[in-house]
Length: 410
Ligand code: HEM
Image 1 (cartoon, rainbow, N blue to C red):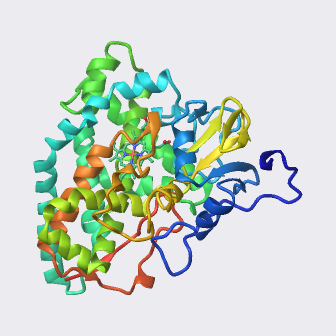
Image 2: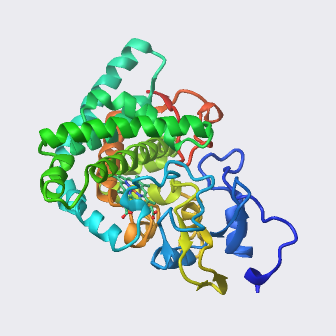
Image 3: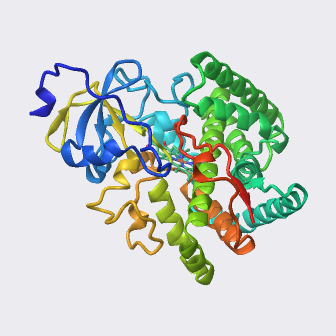
């Protein structure tokens, strides 16, 4: 049995780089592993090892099994090479297990329910239209095109989550800088630590201000309903703010950038979506599947000996769940490397994870993507990249895939 084998050499490093030439694809090694060794051992940057799961069904089995813990303080949790969540101090519920996870998540579930989020659609459309107007002006002035990431992909989710939480939008430059540093794989650890502390201090002050004067927003409601009743401490409210801000920010932004680029590169698909706007929902699911922006996770640690696909994963051993690999599993998504906006089962992707930690913000992300991509297709039918593909700075250095900048013209 594989898992019992004594390894004479260290396992291969965790694959992170997309194959050269195709910035959209997950590492080629995933495809080989799915066939040859779907549950394998990999070396993490600090020299420790973890299991790597690459098949769709194994990944759902692991994420759906609460014997695999999300708690980063459990001995053996594979933290190495993971960014943004390396710290364990006052961590949000994404890094906790039931019953604490259940208790905390429940406090905000209604804020992100489909009905609630659908009601935001007109406001999200208004924000998008305004940013598009500004893009048109900027393009007229500059002639050289605009950076779609800066002009649209980042500000939409950033404005929306800041508005929902009750964070002053004037502070958004600070956030984008800090979260960018936090999620980077290349900045030195001490710089990342400094960014984490700065964000913590900022949110600490924000929560203090809201404790005195809670507004009609998510943080305000948490303070009135949970903080004042003793259910949450000050630090726990700040941890909610940190989790929702970080999780709601760069993820959607990167999906917008990559998806817009994909539609520019596939004019037939773009034209079809213009002809049949009703296809946009399915297209967003397919783009989520295809891009799978969470590149080296999620991760878990086994809390009991558990068999997955014939491999014994022992208590205390870490698991890296390769979501991008699951979403390219040909046994579930035939011709998985192709974008097919009519793919019948695209919505079965695991880009938002699976199980009890499945993305809390998925309804919001979906509406933002539908609105922004729909608007771009309508308003800028001739939009195209202003530079060749190999000059677009892809985020190969980041835990969340995307592009740092996307120069476009039309
Ligand atoms: C969890 C992906 C947007 C908030 C997750 C997880 C994934 C994910 C894969 C599971 C992590 C795990 O199992 O350990 C994405 C993607 C997004 C997106 C691809 C955009 C396209 C958002 C937005 C929010 C958000 C807009 C807004 C607040 C969260 C939260 C969790 C989470 C709070 C933790 C849920 C829990 O632990 O119960 N997300 N996300 N996400 N996401 Fe998202």
